[in-house]
View 1 (cartoon, rainbow, N blue to C red):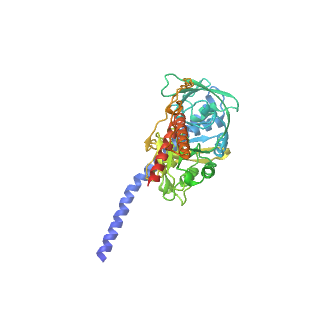
View 2: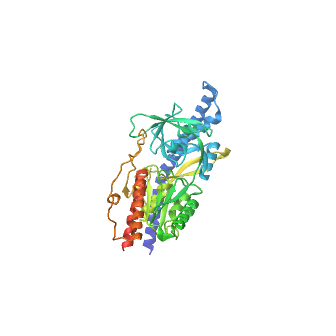
View 3: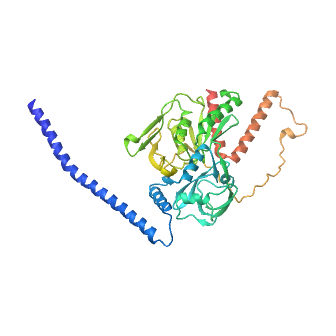
Length: 444
């Protein structure tokens, strides 16, 4: 017993000696690091004073400090930045669903402004701006070398005023100009409609109204269709949805999941992580689902698509999403400004990070690109002859009037599908998937 205690004591003593020997260099390194930080801050002060005293023109000290702060934040990643009081106010308005502008979500890549996605029904969308476009000039002024906030400031202006942006687009040999009239952007977070027997939920953004709009829209469409049995499935359209509030992404995911993890976030320190789980209840009542995504689906959209994909709750159709897998926290600062700082990464239920990789669709379906220079031609009026149109043709005596009416209705629906396929190939594909699943389930 005494030997054991001695051995234990010796082990403890040895541990103390080793710890002391290792701690001394660590403390020295920390002291050196602090000294370097203070020296750099002194250097910053020296430069600031020299600019104030010797720059060729008088400078505004507040603007100079604000630029330094923003430069420090934007050097971290494309999503961290300083928000002036006006910018902070604009962000609050945007989350409420109404603001002035063009209606595009942008980021910065290789010094140019890149369009993450145009927002449905906004001036930019109607002018033909597309996800993936690069904006090189605003009213003839180059944006190269500007920060993202500076470039966005160039695009701001009074409602009703005109702006001309120069765009470089993949597949186009030359840059081209797009004229846009600024307007008040009123976002409808969710638009619900029924195509044939499929409820289509078009989610354009994740703001305070997203989940309430989705819940109300889905309920109304099911009631108008004649009840759940009259609906064969749900299409959740997240294309060109740039994201928004994390809380709303969690609520939308939870709307279609009964249990399990939705998303987890992990910060710099383990204690900063969080995990969000689904609660019982499925608004779609187990109906099959298809989620549509593309390169303009980012952030909150990717959380929803990733959660439903990992739980095998929906078939993901379209093209690879944007790949923004980080979470920003907006922190109020003195003077009514704010700091937007990337504080964590988010992970799908299977533990995968989407950062820079995006969500890959289960079925890759590309949307045919429309030629903006192509002039729409009217379809030729071709006279088509059929047996039924021949004089004196025999009647079909094997079908009742109800059966003939059903055939005609099916034919009309097929023509609607063909028309939809021309207008929106990806959506038509999604509806075909749900129609096939409904047919298989009915045969069981």
